Length: 475
Image (cartoon, rainbow, N blue to C red; front, side):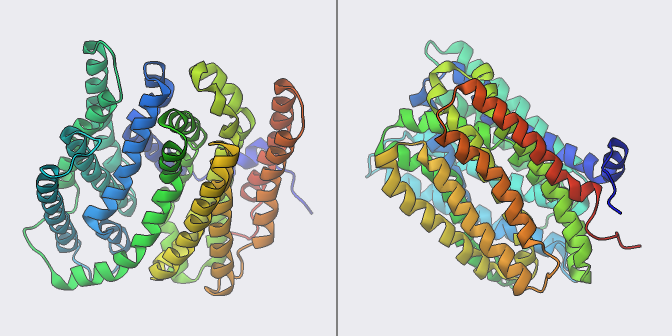
């Protein structure tokens, strides 16, 4: 007998503990990305698309620098916090001292090179890039500790401090400047990153002036193979605007970046849900409770897909209401970017199986394949179809990566309960209306009405596994 979903059953299905932690993570992520969020909804009214394009390129390099100054060692913290027999204080101290040495070397190289090479960026911009990059790494470490401790407040406090400092500095510069530009945002980011860096010393894991060669070797054996993976994710989410700026101009990069950042906002919710469930996911995987693992995946994907469905259905209309008209040329890509984020959420959920089973090399191969597809398609198609096609090349790249991960997890990692057919059907249901509405010559109002109806039904489909679980929960 098939149970009919009701509001009461939906409320009962919601894990209030997970929801509370997830909401705190969402608040932390929103505060942590306050400059990017205000750049979308507030600062864009003060900046030209060219200025927004310059800031977008700057933020793209933050990700690349964060990889370089840590060699991804900070990611290993989240992996080994859960391992028995690891001294977390020594382990984390080792990583931070390593990052400090690399940052010092970066500074020395910059001082030498800047005396001989004339770059387009001023020394102030390069200095800000280093500070913001270190803040990015610190934020990543605090996030991992927060997920391990199952206490989102550890992340909320430094995020709130950074938001207040960054916003205050940026608005002050806007107020004092005769003609505000992207430097106001860059300086706000840099000064706001300093409290996050200092907060590392306030986490429950106490630091020591101690380096362990054993831990350093162990962590790099995990982190270094992940470097291509992190670089690939950076290129997938950021490099398209660098390519657009190089092949077209910074104005086009600014138009694309604003709509991309708006469309991918639900990824904050999906990342928060994934973080809130990390400890439980690891425990179920280690214990071989694969049915519970699938139920977790259904829960995280269903709630995340609901958020993405809202943006896919109404994102373009909301952009007309909330964003400056001078960026309207790129508004049609918003639903496509949201769909790409939903596909990436499936990847994000299931790639953790490979991570926890120490297959970083395989993860990097998958991600590198996706970014290769993305770069080749961008180089071929952007000169022909313009910047908007980059949204669809991102979808294709994420689909390649997600397909590879779910197949490997099901058939090579023994998670036979993973419903590949159901996932493929659900993702296809999300893509069809976007393709259809883009091909059919209809008015804006008709397209929006069609998308609203379709994604209302889609939301019911993705929520059903939460309300009516595939398997009975373990007692």
